[in-house]
Length: 243
Ligand SMILES: NC(=O)c1ccc[n+]([C@@H]2O[C@H](COP(=O)([O-])OP(=O)(O)OC[C@H]3O[C@@H](n4cnc5c(N)ncnc54)[C@H](O)[C@@H]3O)[C@@H](O)[C@H]2O)c1
Ligand SMILES: [Zn+2]
Image (cartoon, rainbow, N blue to C red):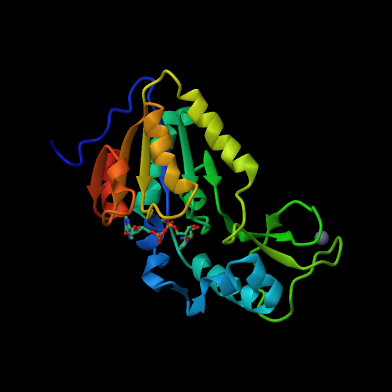
């Protein structure tokens, strides 16, 4: 069988996609693994945990400000575009759940999108319940403060040790519930299968009857959970697989 033979997406088939850092690699955003446990020379727990933020909010804001500046220069690649295209064909039979915070899926045109780990260009108040808001500013100098309560602002990112927003999980659950009794496909791309709960999605979807497909540069930890594995770069593979 042609390893790039497209799955049958006609008729009533649903498609749930999970993406990770690998999908943005060809746009020039380094994946987590590339960094050898360090993230831009910092220990991840220092810059991406609530404890790190409490200890040194200025360091955390310098780190995320650099990431904002870098990501603002970057454009989506052919993998992002292929996912936006297939959504235009499937409409509400499609949902994209991403672990990426770089916002590139939305720039590429994805609309039925769940950003599981938050968004680099969104901030929220660490002190009050003001809703998260768009914030593209690089806060290198003074610490940004909430104009409602004066508390510290923080990046709207799910850090290590933090729970995912229940609304995010509910949206994925609702999509999966809607697949009951239908033909459906779970497609993961560019994700190492190491970060839960995203990594557990494949087993859950397979148990519930989904066809499961993985597109990744190499075989990740949970590779055996997938019915079909296509190794390669997502920018090459996704446009051919979803043609
Ligand atoms: N772009 C981003 O927003 C970004 C970048 C780094 C880390 N993160 C965060 O770090 C965590 C890491 O989990 P993860 O699974 O997303 O990333 P990961 O770095 O753990 O895994 C990335 C996977 O992508 C594969 N890969 C690399 N280049 C690829 C390519 N061109 N095509 C296809 N696959 C490729 C790698 O082999 C690896 O298995 C997530 O929580 C995520 O929020 C986000
Ligand atoms: Zn506030």
